[in-house]
Length: 410
Image 1: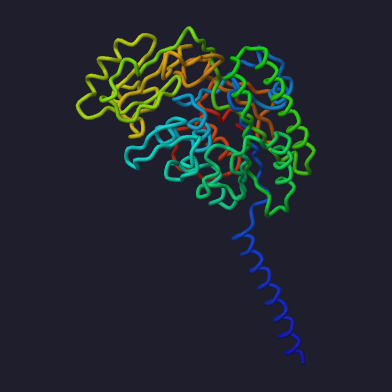
Image 2: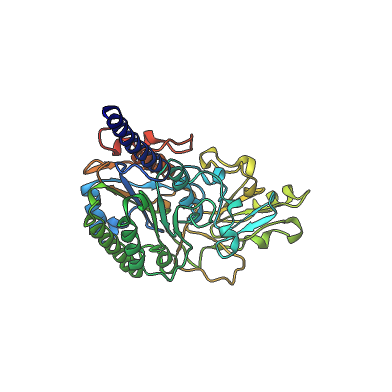
């Protein structure tokens, strides 16, 4: 009887151990480490580095006081929206991740990419390993609300939305809050959130216009709403909020424009879509010299054969850059025709042009308080986020050393 009782106890212990091991394996396979912090990465498209000097931004100023901010964040070249958003989440320059402009032609795929076509969702165009992929591969759930490059379906977070500019900002914020209220195993530890302003208003009216001032103030208030709702969450004290932009904005006018194609013969050119203020063109065989000689006579622009591009651009090794890169000089525009009306602002110029610089603000348990740093490159946001989430990453163009001083205990 005694032996049978012992055997019964052993069976119970073995059964409990078996259940424990099964649960442990389930958590390892399907769960996530609840001790990991959270990162909410927010983009305000086209928010220039110095808007807070010109306009009232009390909510961004409060983040700087409670956490950290940079003098400015240097975008990657060219200073366009899709290339830079994707650089922020891959840690790679556009030349290395492949999104080399908002529109371009891939001579190897023999396909064009643009923001207005289905190609925007074609995973073939997107290189690199986005931070949400890395996190998912290492057991953390992720989500994205409209971040460029997040909605291809193949290199996407667990939760994502296909871009729809009609979705209200309040809806975007409330959805993010709902995601952070999900049960622990379903809750994303990394969320990327995109807002399309003040870029649109800056383009239409110019960076320092009254209209853009109103929009900057509005976007600052949107940040304030988001901060208030994040802080009110039960996990609010575990959330690291990072607010960035992709690029700045420069004034342009109808008196400063260059109809570049007027100087080039159509039979010299392959792909040659005019994009203001920077574009790539493809030369037909035998016409590279003709194009170079003609471009030398065009006023108010710079141009390079790809082999001659400045090294500091980290640009030109990708076949999508084609044969020549043309960039209008500061405050000038590239146009298809002299009849094209130019007003407001644009971006895409040399990333050393300070008007192109972006913002970086952050607060949360992993950041220092009241810390200001100098200008750093936007590709370094990727290793920064990886360090906060404890992710192992491959070598990228960004450097944790460049931003390490922003973190606690560093």
